[in-house]
Amino acid sequence: MSPKIAVVTGGNKGIGYAIVDKLCSVFDGLIYLTARNEQLGLQAVQQLESSNPNASKKVNFHQLDITSVESIHHLAEFIKRNHGGLDILINNAAIAFKTNDITPFGDQAEITAQTNFFGTVNVCNALFPLLRDHARVVNISSRAGMLDSIKNPEIRHNFISPTATIESLSDILNDFIKKAKQDSHQDDGYPNSAYGMSKIALTAVTIIQQRIFDEKPNRDIVVNACCPGYINTDMTSNKGTGTPEQGADTPVYLATLEPHVKSPRGEFVAERKILKWKI
Ligand code: NDP
Image (cartoon, rainbow, N blue to C red; front, side, top):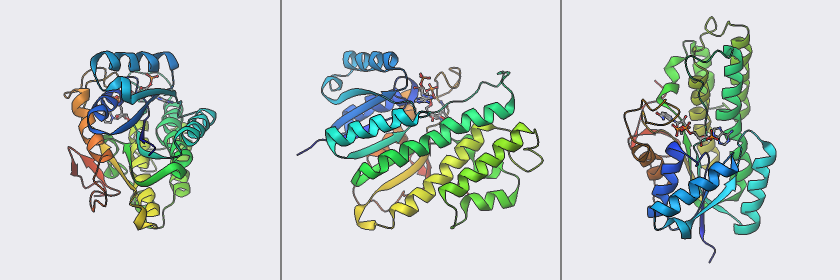
């Protein structure tokens, strides 16, 4: 029988690395630690092999830059050719500009959305056709992207409307980028956070993805978004209060939800509990 397969994006450091480490203990299958930088990815695998006795049998490296359609395509083709399917996808890779970064806000909005939202959606589009029955997908979002940080009720509604689609969410994010470049995004009720907006869109897309999976309930494919907590990594300039291992707990819990789990499905989860994201 072919082994179960997991893919973790942005696995070379931080929470992604800790997720791969934890999966080695709880997941009976092969794990692809992916990274955009091949050298950093291979170093991370080596480091895991020296610290985790399960890693040498379970962890492989594959290059993946989530902003490159070509790189995504290579990974999808590789998984299809070598394994025929995928059981766990953890969309962890993301960027956040530092608060003192002098890049114009409009550019920050565009670059952040291209990675955290459009890049992740492209990974999903390429890998979802490979998902096997009972597959679990985790979109690592953030409490920095709660829906109520959008002050405009119409935009909020459009994000969570039952008729929302991935395309309609993309349109909202593109409108945010346009307004951010004109410095009028706050006049329209958008938050003044490029990272926050990208994560709002990621949590909203999770709801839509589950709605689509639920069209074939027998396949029992589940996707959830989560916040890992405020974690000590490069992203937080090591100011977080939790360790990467703690940050990996909820993502790995969601990635290993038992077959036919009723809840959580299409939810926003933190510390293993469903949060009211839509308020
Ligand atoms: P880090 O900055 O430590 O790690 C981010 C990872 O994403 C790195 O491996 C980075 O690679 C990778 N990455 C960035 N861009 C790309 C890309 N285009 N293609 C592939 N990989 C990429 O962040 P964290 O570990 O803290 O964050 C992990 C996840 O958790 C993110 O989604 C983040 O938004 C989320 N999160 C984190 C919180 C925290 O407190 N730390 C709080 C809430 C959410 P490289 O090394 O090459 O830059």
